[in-house]
Length: 112
Length: 113
Image 1 (cartoon, helix red, strand yellow):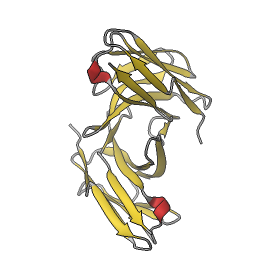
Image 2: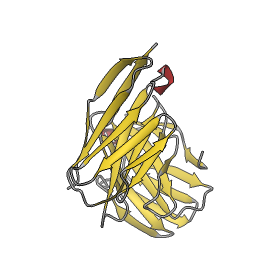
Image 3: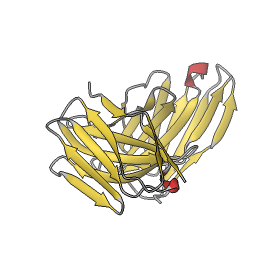
C-alpha cells in the first residue's frame, strides 16, 4: 500500500468552527488531491496540488482552502464549517498526474 | 463537462458467475481510465489503469476494456467470489484537465455464497 495517512480519522465539530485535515505521504509523489464523498454525488474533487506551494481548485472548492508547504503534507482547511460539509474526505497522491492515484483511508467529518 | 456514468448502480450475483460492469463517459479526449474498488468504510484501491492508446488491461481475474471512440469501458470479473463484494468505481482523466480525475458514482456488487 502507498504510504498515505490522514488525520484525524474521525472528527465532530460545530458549525462555524475552523477545521484542518491533514494528509501525509511518504512516497515523494508530486501530485496530491482532496476529495469528498457523499451519497448520491460520488467522489468530487475539492482542491489539488501539483507541487510545493502549487495548488488549484477542483469541482467543489467553495468554503475550502489548502496549503502545501512541503512535498509530504497537504492540508485542507474548512474556514468556518457548515453542516453541508459533513462528509467523508479522501486524500490521494499520484507520482506524475497521469499515473494511478493512490488513496488514503479517509476522514469522517460531522458538522453539527 | 465530462460526465461518467456507471450502470447498473447495484448488482447481485451468485458465486462463480462471470460478470461485467459498465462505465461510459461523454468526452472521449481522455488520458486514461481507471477502475477502483471500495470496501465499506474504506478508501479506494486501484485495480486497473488503461491508457487512452490501449484497448484492455488484465490483472488476475479482472479484465478491463476501453473503447474511447464510443466512450465506454467494461470491467469483466471472472469466476466471482464473495470477497469481490464491494463498490466498483471508474474514473477518467480528461486531456487538458491538469490530471484531474472525474468519477462515476459506482456499482455496488454483491456476490452471494
